[in-house]
Length: 132
Image 1 (tube, one colour):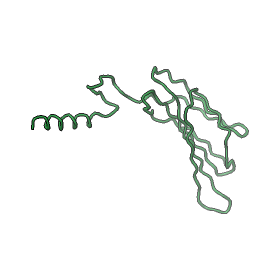
Image 2 (cartoon, one colour):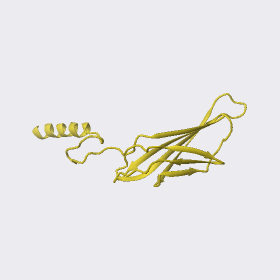
Image 3 (cartoon, rainbow, N blue to C red):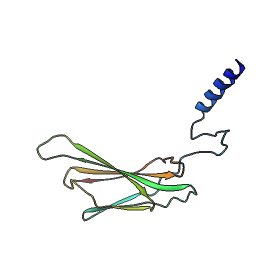
Image 4 (cartoon, helix red, strand yellow):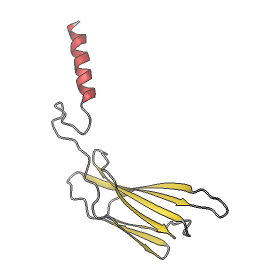
């Protein structure tokens, strides 16, 4: 009976320890990386250039970019949405040449995340561009 009690207490304790809090079994503090800073988005002919500050954290692994496009097709009154995730980016710059629906009333939104070696994801940095 005593072993069951100890197992239940241990299970509750382990469940309560989230991955962002201090974990006494593994005393290292686990937290997500910092969000990418100073994100800029520049439109050039048929491409977007995203640039941001380097992540200097020792456990940094890569960046992830989520792109969302909203656009209105001719003859329709509602917007359509397409999304794409680009993973494995190791530099703090990305050139997106795979653009679609570059016309009036289309909207490009980019979210950039930093990923660390434990696969924790940072809060995002946002940049958007609206074609009028």
